[in-house]
Length: 484
Ligand SMILES: [Zn+2]
Picture 1 (spheres, rainbow, N blue to C red):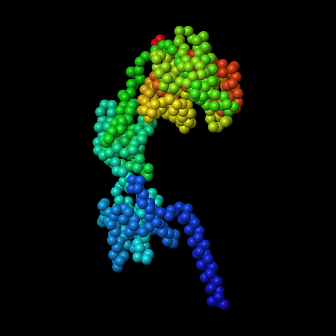
Picture 2 (picture 1 turned 90 degrees about the horizontal axis):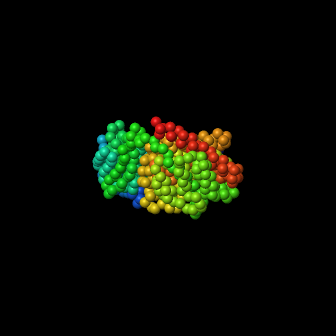
Picture 3 (picture 1 turned 45 degrees about the vertical axis):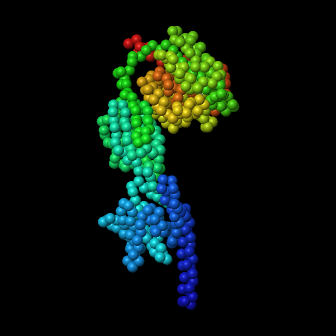
């Protein structure tokens, strides 16, 4: 009776253990891989992972060989020596203690011996090998990645340029924010100490290197007195050219506005946005632009009013900016209608040029600038010209922003509830213009109701009237500054 009872207990116990094991197995499987990889600049070697009682292991002999190290095993002492170019380590079977150089460390999981093979736990690979491999090695969960080591030999600064001299130049991309240049070196590792600059009074104020699993990022913050101009890549160096920023007291006195340039967005083969019921943005833009021209001509004496296009023709963005730049002391007003995937979106937006953007503004900008791809030569798609114009516009930023505000105020007074505000964006069409410049989005044709309204002549005339009033308000204000 007693024996029988014990027997039942035993069976239950085994079943229970089996169940626990099964659950554990499922859980581990979610976060596990069957191979451990070693990625040397794109060349990948794989190593089989053995799952032993819920812990993942790799064969240490193979791992060390793939990492170009040497391994020795003293059977009696169960002592393993792993040697690399950088250092050596002594480990013991079933012991969490590791000696590297003269120091002892503890690792989370222990090496084990199974059928004369040494198995090393995947979860402790980083703990051990980060001490044995060069610093440009990156450890991911199931991968060791060898990065190219990039060292900065020298930084040369002169009045308006910085040259960063490296051991070699890897694949580089960059991004620009208002005061930073962010360089990204793919699959590279940069030495953080040699690249770091703190609180300098020079052109580079701060420079911060960050290494991560994709490569290294180098954030350079430059002095606010400078505008970034161009980035040049050479064999072993990167040169950043700057323009010394004109401070506001150097800015020329406001001049009387002589010309108003009206730009009807899109045209010809570029229809712009397509409405809920198929209305083409280009046609609405042109109609509003023509109405605006008439109002300006009839009401503002002594000001020349010109249109970038007065019929349905394609104009490249470059054509538009070249046209605008022929007129000195002018205002530039680009007319558009908006569209969004969100069919509920509605209202007016007035943009002026700036480098600071929200995600929303980036999305609009991307769509309006889509026509860039119709006509820009390859060299100009790379961004250097964009950036140059972008920042040269700074001088007119304040005026552009005021013009945008005055137009937007008119819209919002008239149509309550459709307020979307003044926004900043780096529209290409505005970028070549060294003049107060805005872009007006006269509502959403992707919105069924707004499209319907925009198809109405009277409504379009009202919109032209509001833009006209905004421009008139701006000119009045501006003229006061001129006569001072
Ligand atoms: Zn448009």
